[in-house]
Image 1 (tube, helix red, strand yellow):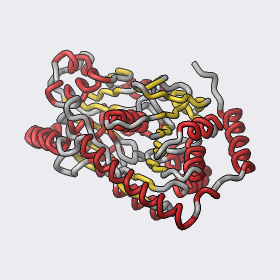
Image 2 (spheres, rainbow, N blue to C red; image 1 turned 90 degrees about the vertical axis):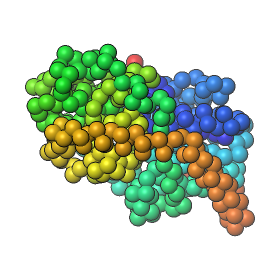
Image 3 (cartoon, helix red, strand yellow; image 1 turned 180 degrees about the horizontal axis):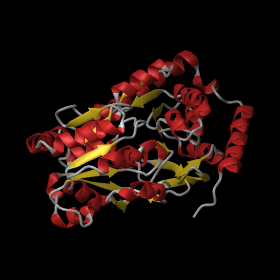
Length: 406
């Protein structure tokens, strides 16, 4: 199995988490795994090598490294001779994975996990929205099978012309993320000196444009509510300035046991980002016994059962404030939602989700076998001129957007 992931540890986001858990599952089930990732990634996962592909960091998001199309991917894939290639949120580097898979008659499965066209609007380059969508459609339609994290995302992709789209959801580690990790010391840390009788609202995620953390500013001003922001990113300084008229606490990144304790020691989870294709943080919150307040936009709303495990609200700051105040003023509803959140999370273990992935792999193998017979994929994308064009495009990107790495 070859895994090509556009983001990986030590970066903490949905793509890197899902890639890591998929790799661990493949290793545990006896597969030999070769991993491709940007060059800031860790060197290996257990016995599996991580091939670190030359990359650049984005000026608009320095914590994000983008690996450009590079022949090292093709060379190593050909030497490795995978039985299946899995692309995690393909963008640039994954191009060679798709093309080599087609040439070698190897099934290629791709996750659609990052709403890059939607990000274009958030970063004030809306003119790139359609070109990005066209590029992703080309890349995904060159794959054998595409996996969307929610039904809503699947519908949107099919409407946009993406083919062979299936739903592959996400699981949650219910042993790590559990209400049992609630403790007074972590709660005191999250409160940062604020009164313990306040409703402690938690945001977890990167501090970047697309997360729209500023939508929580009004919420932080409300009586009886304490907002704590867990995460970091290039917007941290400006957000700290924005929230300076409140008593909001910024903790920076928390990972592992500390993150699990933070979820469990809070009261409510809030997340306003409108471009999430799934929203793994919301599911981690549910497993920790927190009702979640999320926007109706994007795929994150499908993680929540409205009125049962939280609220799916209109995409306005006022809607978030009203929903949280409703829980502040109704302790019985809050207690009920906390119980419901944990109960629903228990039905979504990673083991069952990986079972679904196995079925998708099997379907990809069958589709690929039919396509080989009907269309002769060995003739697809052999043009050296095409590869040279994309290599030149990658070089241009590196020059245009490169930032000196820390």
